[in-house]
Amino acid sequence: MRFVRYSAASGPTWGVHDGSDVRPVGGLPTGEPTYADFTNDSYLSAVRERLDADSLPRQPLAEVSLLAPVPVPGKIVCAGLNYRDHAEEQDEEIPEVPLLFSKAPTTVTNPGDPIVHPGSGEEVDYEVELGVVIGERCSDIDESAVPDHVAGYTVINDVSGRTAQFDDGQFFRGKSFDTFSPMGPSLAVGDDFDPNAVDVALRVNGETKQESSTEQFIFDVPELVSYISENMTLRAGDVISTGTPGGVGIFRDPVDLLEPGDDCEAEIEGIGTLENPVVGE
Image 1 (cartoon, one colour):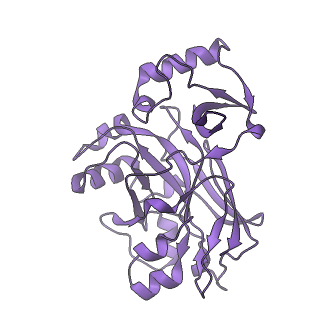
Image 2 (cartoon, helix red, strand yellow; image 1 turned 90 degrees about the vertical axis):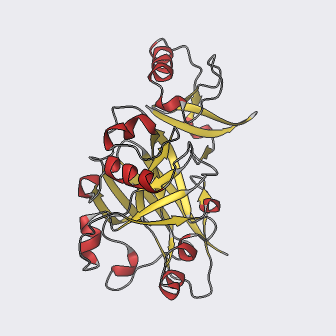
Image 3 (spheres, rainbow, N blue to C red; image 1 turned 45 degrees about the vertical axis):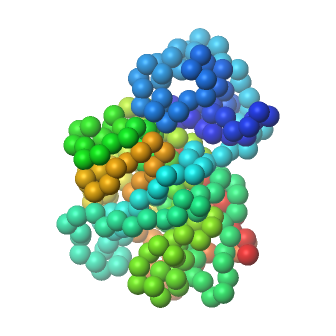
């Protein structure tokens, strides 16, 4: 199932993406779902039963404003060089352990909202990534236990300020400009989504820039989440961004970066397309 978070008259709410409609789930006896609910087979079964019985109301998807599945993550943990084709385009050796860095939680922006180009000579790049949303607190867990602690999967555009990144010699500032983590449009929940075998792509103004598959992962989702949990406690609502494939703008010849007026589409099979315009500051 694909859950979406969206604006309703009463405030942000959750629903199931069902064809061209949204089916609100806030009216279930449990009320608005939590990230832990998305790890609960009983909750998901209850939603499926109501979908099958056509007992949930319908609202056209085109009439709602989608919101990021996690508006304020406790933390965003990112993996660098986690696709073989991305390592190859940089002529980097395949890492033996995950390369981790973080982004500020204030970078999150909604589907359809603008990516704000900071200007001032900043080189702004795109990176389509699979995002893993944690549903239950975990620490030092085995790979086999990872699926039990994952709420679902979403699309993240790990927008990057390359000038700041290269000037600093590290990632945090260049990755943490406001609006630099568009997220959405949905949260893929349940066992029918295989995070390690889906196609990923990114387009700028309709032209494909990145196209790969998570089968290119160096460290798959269980390996990555387990490794991170060995080093820090993960809590519900934390987000792990699993790395980007080859084709990013900074390593193209000639360099091909985002500018105000561009339209960026990040797409992952089974989750949907995350579209954001680029605007000047």
